[in-house]
Image 1 (cartoon, helix red, strand yellow):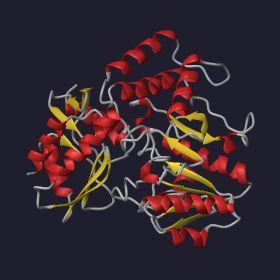
Image 2 (cartoon, one colour; image 1 turned 60 degrees about the vertical axis):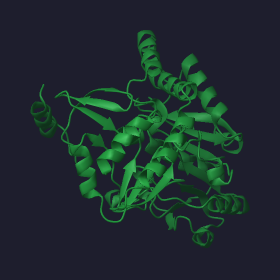
Image 3 (cartoon, one colour; image 1 turned 180 degrees about the horizontal axis):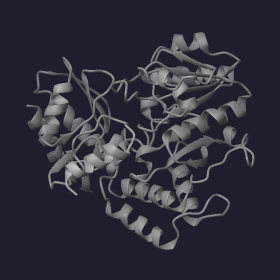
Image 4 (cartoon, one colour; image 1 turned 135 degrees about the horizontal axis):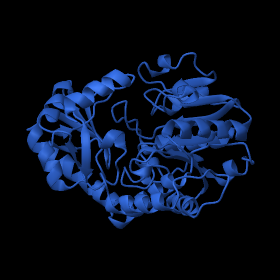
Length: 386
């Protein structure tokens, strides 16, 4: 089918979601995609930060092919070798306090279950989240989101959600009390324009949580799985080595196969009994194979080290462009801040066959590339910007 035929069918039979780029993806390899018309695009957005290992990484493709030939799916009513290995690997690379994993299907599901587990643990209702944070589109997650118009889209909202100012520890102290079940945050707020907080902010959150027996949740749907150069933001120097009680993951975790997870410490784990949590598709064999292969590929190809080098390289290359005000973020979660709106820049880059992302900050262009991106591919972005 040509592009116009594909476009016509989608518009006719699919409900509206995002404002789409007028291309139809047919194949991909590494940091590149090819369209139905045979055009080649450099993908610096990775399908919303999903394609961490690049498109069609050989290890991931081989693992999926092998699993498909064995069994596509069976639920958590049975044991599974590949699920067991995926859970073991996640706990092994996680901060030391993490002991168990709960698989689900997406980031918003992971966040919903994280809040549920916090309420089970504390027997409380209130959840503190932050201005600029985005946690998903299901009922509890969108009610925890205080970014733009998203919360209004989820009305009627789930009660007991309150908003603190991201990076302002005093605003958290004013809200935290003996009625608070959890404090949940994106350690780097991606959609808000790649907004960061100082490491001491996370130390302050940990202190407040310990004082009031509050569960600390890091929504690492975008910062996790090596994207910042660390396996996780939690436990890293970026967080002043603070470890969250629950870490939620999705996006990059399956290299494109839908999968989410909650990683929890022993205190949370001991609160969960049989039948407290459930999921039909969560932890399915195909998803588990994708998780295991993704983590092994990132490790074997030294992608975490690579993306840290890429960040430093990009910072240097951007210094020669007057219109660039700063580079926000870490590793492969980056925001190029311009002196004025980047809407036209985003479109012009697309015209030059480079895919990037925008954000709620009109001046910030987001980059969420595969962790295997190369310096000569970054050079193509720099030359296009110039």
